[in-house]
Length: 448
Image 1 (spheres, rainbow, N blue to C red):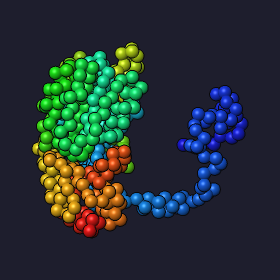
Image 2 (tube, rainbow, N blue to C red):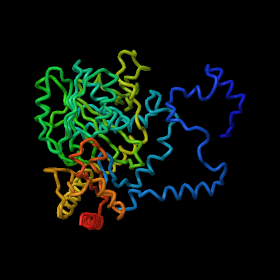
Image 3 (cartoon, rainbow, N blue to C red):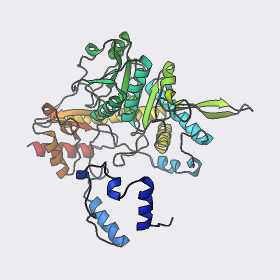
Image 4 (spheres, rainbow, N blue to C red):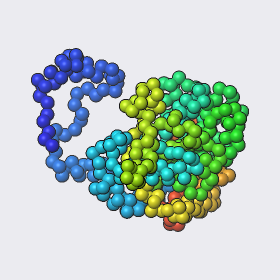
């Protein structure tokens, strides 16, 4: 594609058309402190090789996840993605000029979305699942809005174990939707008394398991308390691999399940794109955001797939639309489906078991370091430790020794000073005995 830069006459004509006199006036709504005066301090020109070398030097300052022992989690996990996944998603059969939410999409696309929905429904223990959301956090926000539509109430209770970034998304959506949010204090274990906060105005209770600190939560008593007051239970899962080892949220009474699917088929990728999973009971189907692909037969009795339910305002009356977030991260969704298909049920359970095994080995190793305390009573592949020094300082010192040792709680909850000596640590199948030994040795040295 040729690059045709604008000249001054072009700019004047464009500004006149939109009714402003200058480029500065066009950006008048941007605060002055956020604007740069003059040109950015960059060389006027550079060759392609010079640019490559400069950017290469800048990139080398990063400590990439694959270069060192890596124990960072808290909502985004490093798992092994088989090379087959990347190979298959790039096959021409999956290429389409249509965006994935259009009804004209191909049978192949519809079929893998149908398979994806089936996988999500089986994993979560629910009856229906949609064809994915942007990510787990926006799915969580959509779930709260959905619960308010179902119950015609406007109060949401968020567990103290909900990931703070998920909580921020719910706060943001609820603020503009006019609903009320009660966020409970941070709690590593399930000892928080959620039931005491549920009343006749409560639309939903949002609980994450394993929670952001790694603690596994029994949702059954919370579901019972919510249902007794006519409220819904929204279960949040940020580590989808945990569903290969733990009882599904649906079995524990959840009404809506939202999860982050990044762990399967999708790498960390410096923060995205990810793939949100969303499932619910069939009786709530009409209030579910997004879209649903269904299976049918054509006039000749041949098996086929169709876009069955789509609640965007383009497809139904605007006042009946449930959400604008109804497209999906199509490629991530395909990668998830292929990865899980390659694993199969038995392989998925073995992967989950390996994750838990490695986390237990790591907890034993770190718990043996002088001054370190493992705070969880139960966990899957992530847990929280307390150190005698501030967690952020420990993480920085570990990084200096070539170990990415986890996420300091202070980074997620900067206002909660009492938790600043805690670190959330994750282990997956990619961690070896040598990785764990290196972590223990480095932590012992840092805390000596």
